Length: 336
Image (tube, rainbow, N blue to C red):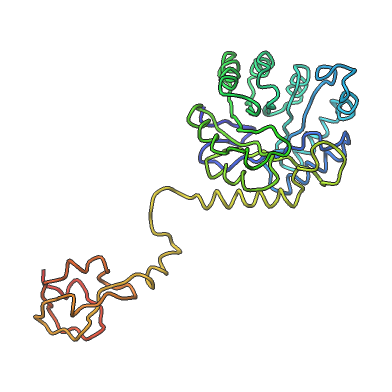
Protein backbone atom coordinates (compact mmCIF):
# COMPACT_ATOMS: atom_id res chain seq x y z
CA UNK A 1 0.00 0.00 0.00
CA UNK A 2 1.33 3.42 -0.95
CA UNK A 3 -0.64 5.09 1.84
CA UNK A 4 -2.06 4.24 5.24
CA UNK A 5 -4.67 5.96 7.36
CA UNK A 6 -4.44 6.54 11.12
CA UNK A 7 -7.75 7.82 12.44
CA UNK A 8 -8.73 10.19 9.64
CA UNK A 9 -5.15 11.17 8.84
CA UNK A 10 -3.86 9.83 5.52
CA UNK A 11 -0.11 9.17 5.44
CA UNK A 12 1.74 8.75 2.18
CA UNK A 13 3.14 10.51 -0.86
CA UNK A 14 1.48 13.86 -1.50
CA UNK A 15 0.32 14.18 2.11
CA UNK A 16 1.86 16.38 4.81
CA UNK A 17 4.58 14.59 6.77
CA UNK A 18 3.16 12.78 9.80
CA UNK A 19 5.19 14.06 12.76
CA UNK A 20 5.40 11.88 15.88
CA UNK A 21 6.62 13.27 19.20
CA UNK A 22 8.25 10.21 20.75
CA UNK A 23 7.68 10.71 24.48
CA UNK A 24 8.63 7.10 25.24
CA UNK A 25 9.31 6.90 28.97
CA UNK A 26 10.09 10.60 29.34
CA UNK A 27 7.08 10.90 31.64
CA UNK A 28 9.29 9.31 34.35
CA UNK A 29 6.32 7.30 35.60
CA UNK A 30 4.30 10.44 36.40
CA UNK A 31 0.84 10.59 34.74
CA UNK A 32 0.70 14.37 35.12
CA UNK A 33 4.02 14.72 33.33
CA UNK A 34 2.66 12.46 30.59
CA UNK A 35 -0.35 14.77 30.22
CA UNK A 36 1.97 17.77 29.95
CA UNK A 37 3.92 15.98 27.23
CA UNK A 38 0.67 15.45 25.33
CA UNK A 39 -0.37 19.11 25.64
CA UNK A 40 3.04 20.44 24.68
CA UNK A 41 3.43 18.10 21.70
CA UNK A 42 0.08 19.29 20.39
CA UNK A 43 1.08 22.93 20.90
CA UNK A 44 4.29 22.24 18.95
CA UNK A 45 2.25 21.06 15.96
CA UNK A 46 3.02 17.33 16.16
CA UNK A 47 0.42 15.01 14.64
CA UNK A 48 0.89 12.26 17.24
CA UNK A 49 2.36 11.64 20.68
CA UNK A 50 3.84 8.20 21.37
CA UNK A 51 4.60 6.39 24.60
CA UNK A 52 5.80 2.85 25.40
CA UNK A 53 3.70 0.06 26.90
CA UNK A 54 5.14 -3.12 28.36
CA UNK A 55 4.81 -5.77 31.02
CA UNK A 56 8.09 -5.59 32.92
CA UNK A 57 8.33 -9.32 33.64
CA UNK A 58 7.91 -10.00 29.91
CA UNK A 59 10.71 -7.58 29.13
CA UNK A 60 13.29 -8.54 31.80
CA UNK A 61 13.89 -11.23 34.34
CA UNK A 62 13.24 -9.94 37.90
CA UNK A 63 16.97 -10.01 38.72
CA UNK A 64 17.89 -7.82 35.73
CA UNK A 65 19.50 -4.52 36.87
CA UNK A 66 16.96 -2.47 34.88
CA UNK A 67 13.88 -4.34 36.12
CA UNK A 68 12.98 -1.96 38.96
CA UNK A 69 13.70 1.16 36.93
CA UNK A 70 11.38 0.02 34.14
CA UNK A 71 8.72 -1.15 36.58
CA UNK A 72 8.44 2.42 37.92
CA UNK A 73 7.42 3.62 34.46
CA UNK A 74 4.45 1.28 34.00
CA UNK A 75 1.03 2.89 33.75
CA UNK A 76 -2.26 1.26 34.68
CA UNK A 77 -5.19 0.88 32.32
CA UNK A 78 -6.94 3.73 34.12
CA UNK A 79 -3.99 6.06 33.45
CA UNK A 80 -3.93 5.13 29.79
CA UNK A 81 -7.61 6.03 29.55
CA UNK A 82 -6.80 9.42 31.03
CA UNK A 83 -3.94 9.94 28.58
CA UNK A 84 -6.09 8.96 25.61
CA UNK A 85 -8.73 11.39 26.85
CA UNK A 86 -6.13 14.14 27.17
CA UNK A 87 -4.92 13.41 23.63
CA UNK A 88 -8.45 13.75 22.25
CA UNK A 89 -8.88 17.02 24.14
CA UNK A 90 -5.59 18.29 22.70
CA UNK A 91 -6.46 17.10 19.17
CA UNK A 92 -3.38 14.92 18.86
CA UNK A 93 -3.26 11.20 17.99
CA UNK A 94 -2.30 8.93 20.89
CA UNK A 95 0.12 6.12 20.03
CA UNK A 96 2.16 3.71 22.09
CA UNK A 97 4.72 1.03 21.27
CA UNK A 98 3.76 -2.34 22.78
CA UNK A 99 6.55 -4.73 23.76
CA UNK A 100 4.52 -7.87 24.45
CA UNK A 101 1.22 -9.49 23.55
CA UNK A 102 -0.57 -8.46 26.75
CA UNK A 103 0.41 -4.82 26.22
CA UNK A 104 -0.69 -4.97 22.59
CA UNK A 105 -4.03 -6.42 23.68
CA UNK A 106 -4.47 -3.70 26.29
CA UNK A 107 -3.83 -0.94 23.77
CA UNK A 108 -6.20 -2.60 21.32
CA UNK A 109 -8.95 -2.75 23.95
CA UNK A 110 -8.45 0.97 24.61
CA UNK A 111 -9.07 1.73 20.95
CA UNK A 112 -5.57 2.71 19.86
CA UNK A 113 -5.49 3.79 16.21
CA UNK A 114 -2.24 2.07 15.16
CA UNK A 115 0.74 0.12 16.46
CA UNK A 116 4.22 1.60 16.37
CA UNK A 117 6.76 -1.24 16.46
CA UNK A 118 10.21 -0.50 17.87
CA UNK A 119 13.37 -1.66 16.13
CA UNK A 120 14.10 -4.10 18.95
CA UNK A 121 11.02 -6.13 18.03
CA UNK A 122 11.79 -6.38 14.31
CA UNK A 123 13.16 -9.93 14.64
CA UNK A 124 10.40 -11.03 17.07
CA UNK A 125 8.35 -12.48 14.23
CA UNK A 126 5.68 -14.17 16.34
CA UNK A 127 5.00 -10.88 18.06
CA UNK A 128 4.75 -9.08 14.72
CA UNK A 129 2.19 -11.64 13.59
CA UNK A 130 0.22 -11.08 16.80
CA UNK A 131 0.14 -7.35 16.11
CA UNK A 132 -0.82 -7.91 12.49
CA UNK A 133 -3.74 -10.10 13.57
CA UNK A 134 -5.35 -7.03 15.14
CA UNK A 135 -5.69 -5.52 11.65
CA UNK A 136 -4.57 -2.09 12.77
CA UNK A 137 -2.13 0.06 10.78
CA UNK A 138 1.47 -0.65 11.75
CA UNK A 139 4.54 1.59 11.69
CA UNK A 140 7.70 -0.53 11.76
CA UNK A 141 11.11 0.87 12.71
CA UNK A 142 14.07 -0.84 11.04
CA UNK A 143 17.06 -0.02 13.25
CA UNK A 144 19.75 -2.63 14.04
CA UNK A 145 18.77 -4.71 11.03
CA UNK A 146 20.01 -5.87 7.65
CA UNK A 147 17.76 -6.17 4.60
CA UNK A 148 17.21 -9.89 5.11
CA UNK A 149 15.83 -9.22 8.59
CA UNK A 150 13.63 -6.39 7.29
CA UNK A 151 12.29 -8.62 4.51
CA UNK A 152 11.52 -11.38 7.02
CA UNK A 153 9.66 -8.95 9.26
CA UNK A 154 7.55 -7.61 6.39
CA UNK A 155 6.80 -11.15 5.19
CA UNK A 156 5.74 -12.19 8.71
CA UNK A 157 3.33 -9.25 8.91
CA UNK A 158 1.95 -9.85 5.44
CA UNK A 159 1.51 -13.57 6.09
CA UNK A 160 -1.32 -12.71 8.49
CA UNK A 161 -3.26 -10.63 6.01
CA UNK A 162 -3.50 -7.32 4.20
CA UNK A 163 -2.08 -5.04 6.89
CA UNK A 164 -1.61 -1.29 6.38
CA UNK A 165 2.12 -0.96 6.90
CA UNK A 166 4.51 1.99 7.02
CA UNK A 167 8.23 1.67 7.66
CA UNK A 168 10.81 3.94 9.26
CA UNK A 169 14.48 4.14 8.44
CA UNK A 170 16.21 4.20 11.82
CA UNK A 171 19.67 4.01 13.34
CA UNK A 172 19.35 2.74 16.90
CA UNK A 173 21.94 4.92 18.59
CA UNK A 174 20.99 7.37 21.34
CA UNK A 175 21.99 9.92 20.25
CA UNK A 176 22.88 8.98 16.69
CA UNK A 177 25.99 10.59 15.15
CA UNK A 178 25.04 12.45 11.97
CA UNK A 179 27.77 10.60 10.05
CA UNK A 180 25.94 7.30 10.71
CA UNK A 181 22.42 8.42 9.77
CA UNK A 182 22.56 7.35 6.09
CA UNK A 183 19.36 9.17 5.18
CA UNK A 184 19.61 7.91 1.57
CA UNK A 185 18.40 4.55 2.85
CA UNK A 186 14.94 6.11 2.73
CA UNK A 187 15.21 6.13 -1.06
CA UNK A 188 16.25 2.48 -1.05
CA UNK A 189 13.29 1.50 1.17
CA UNK A 190 10.91 3.47 -1.07
CA UNK A 191 12.15 1.54 -4.09
CA UNK A 192 11.98 -1.82 -2.33
CA UNK A 193 8.61 -1.65 -0.57
CA UNK A 194 5.17 -0.46 -1.64
CA UNK A 195 4.63 1.34 1.66
CA UNK A 196 4.97 4.85 3.10
CA UNK A 197 8.55 5.29 4.29
CA UNK A 198 9.60 7.60 7.11
CA UNK A 199 12.45 8.36 9.46
CA UNK A 200 12.91 7.77 13.18
CA UNK A 201 15.43 10.45 14.07
CA UNK A 202 17.75 10.03 17.03
CA UNK A 203 20.19 12.80 16.10
CA UNK A 204 20.51 16.05 18.02
CA UNK A 205 19.94 18.40 15.07
CA UNK A 206 17.21 19.19 12.53
CA UNK A 207 19.37 18.47 9.49
CA UNK A 208 18.76 14.75 9.04
CA UNK A 209 15.00 15.02 9.47
CA UNK A 210 14.80 17.81 6.91
CA UNK A 211 16.95 15.82 4.48
CA UNK A 212 14.63 12.84 5.02
CA UNK A 213 11.56 14.92 4.17
CA UNK A 214 13.31 16.23 1.07
CA UNK A 215 13.92 12.59 0.03
CA UNK A 216 10.23 11.80 0.45
CA UNK A 217 9.86 10.67 4.07
CA UNK A 218 6.15 10.54 4.92
CA UNK A 219 6.73 10.22 8.69
CA UNK A 220 9.25 11.81 11.04
CA UNK A 221 9.57 10.61 14.61
CA UNK A 222 11.60 12.65 17.11
CA UNK A 223 12.20 11.98 20.81
CA UNK A 224 10.44 14.55 22.99
CA UNK A 225 10.89 15.81 26.54
CA UNK A 226 9.67 18.67 28.68
CA UNK A 227 13.26 19.43 29.74
CA UNK A 228 16.78 18.17 29.07
CA UNK A 229 17.50 18.48 32.78
CA UNK A 230 15.05 15.79 33.93
CA UNK A 231 16.50 12.48 35.18
CA UNK A 232 16.07 9.47 32.89
CA UNK A 233 17.41 7.71 29.82
CA UNK A 234 16.31 9.82 26.90
CA UNK A 235 15.90 13.38 28.15
CA UNK A 236 19.44 14.50 27.29
CA UNK A 237 19.10 13.96 23.52
CA UNK A 238 15.33 14.45 23.15
CA UNK A 239 13.92 17.68 21.76
CA UNK A 240 12.28 20.08 24.19
CA UNK A 241 9.14 22.06 23.19
CA UNK A 242 11.08 24.94 21.64
CA UNK A 243 13.18 22.55 19.55
CA UNK A 244 10.20 20.47 18.45
CA UNK A 245 8.26 23.59 17.46
CA UNK A 246 11.23 24.71 15.38
CA UNK A 247 11.52 21.31 13.71
CA UNK A 248 7.80 21.10 12.89
CA UNK A 249 7.91 24.59 11.36
CA UNK A 250 11.02 23.70 9.36
CA UNK A 251 9.46 20.47 8.04
CA UNK A 252 6.37 22.36 6.89
CA UNK A 253 8.60 24.92 5.15
CA UNK A 254 10.55 22.13 3.42
CA UNK A 255 7.27 20.62 2.20
CA UNK A 256 6.18 23.97 0.78
CA UNK A 257 9.58 24.56 -0.81
CA UNK A 258 9.56 21.15 -2.52
CA UNK A 259 6.58 22.30 -4.57
CA UNK A 260 5.98 20.64 -7.93
CA UNK A 261 8.44 19.06 -10.39
CA UNK A 262 7.19 20.89 -13.49
CA UNK A 263 9.36 23.86 -14.51
CA UNK A 264 7.34 27.05 -14.87
CA UNK A 265 7.60 30.76 -14.05
CA UNK A 266 6.26 31.44 -10.58
CA UNK A 267 3.99 34.31 -9.66
CA UNK A 268 6.80 35.99 -7.70
CA UNK A 269 9.16 35.73 -10.67
CA UNK A 270 6.80 37.54 -13.05
CA UNK A 271 7.64 41.02 -11.73
CA UNK A 272 11.38 40.25 -11.72
CA UNK A 273 11.12 38.84 -15.24
CA UNK A 274 9.85 42.21 -16.50
CA UNK A 275 12.93 43.90 -15.05
CA UNK A 276 15.66 41.28 -15.56
CA UNK A 277 14.81 39.88 -19.00
CA UNK A 278 16.12 41.61 -22.13
CA UNK A 279 14.36 42.67 -25.32
CA UNK A 280 15.40 43.95 -28.76
CA UNK A 281 15.77 47.73 -29.14
CA UNK A 282 16.91 50.10 -31.90
CA UNK A 283 20.59 51.01 -31.37
CA UNK A 284 20.28 53.82 -33.96
CA UNK A 285 17.28 55.56 -35.59
CA UNK A 286 15.83 53.00 -37.99
CA UNK A 287 14.14 54.21 -41.17
CA UNK A 288 11.42 52.25 -42.89
CA UNK A 289 13.07 49.86 -45.34
CA UNK A 290 16.23 49.38 -43.29
CA UNK A 291 17.62 45.87 -43.10
CA UNK A 292 18.15 44.80 -39.52
CA UNK A 293 21.69 43.85 -38.53
CA UNK A 294 23.59 43.18 -35.31
CA UNK A 295 25.08 46.69 -35.62
CA UNK A 296 21.79 48.60 -35.65
CA UNK A 297 20.12 46.61 -32.89
CA UNK A 298 20.81 46.25 -29.15
CA UNK A 299 19.58 43.68 -26.63
CA UNK A 300 19.01 45.18 -23.20
CA UNK A 301 16.65 45.50 -20.26
CA UNK A 302 13.75 45.72 -19.57
CA UNK A 303 11.66 43.02 -21.20
CA UNK A 304 9.69 44.11 -24.24
CA UNK A 305 7.52 42.93 -27.14
CA UNK A 306 10.38 40.99 -28.76
CA UNK A 307 12.55 39.00 -26.35
CA UNK A 308 16.31 38.49 -26.54
CA UNK A 309 15.94 34.91 -27.79
CA UNK A 310 14.35 36.27 -31.02
CA UNK A 311 17.44 38.29 -31.94
CA UNK A 312 18.78 35.95 -34.64
CA UNK A 313 15.29 35.58 -36.13
CA UNK A 314 15.04 39.30 -36.97
CA UNK A 315 18.49 39.70 -38.53
CA UNK A 316 18.26 40.37 -42.27
CA UNK A 317 14.60 41.36 -42.12
CA UNK A 318 13.19 44.72 -43.22
CA UNK A 319 11.78 47.45 -40.96
CA UNK A 320 8.26 48.59 -41.95
CA UNK A 321 8.24 51.94 -40.08
CA UNK A 322 10.55 54.55 -38.68
CA UNK A 323 11.73 53.48 -35.23
CA UNK A 324 13.43 56.06 -32.98
CA UNK A 325 16.70 55.19 -31.25
CA UNK A 326 16.14 53.26 -28.00
CA UNK A 327 12.62 52.12 -28.85
CA UNK A 328 11.68 48.46 -28.48
CA UNK A 329 10.90 46.51 -31.63
CA UNK A 330 7.48 44.95 -32.05
CA UNK A 331 6.60 41.94 -34.21
CA UNK A 332 4.41 44.13 -36.46
CA UNK A 333 7.39 46.41 -37.20
CA UNK A 334 9.16 43.72 -39.18
CA UNK A 335 8.38 42.35 -42.61
CA UNK A 336 8.06 38.59 -42.60
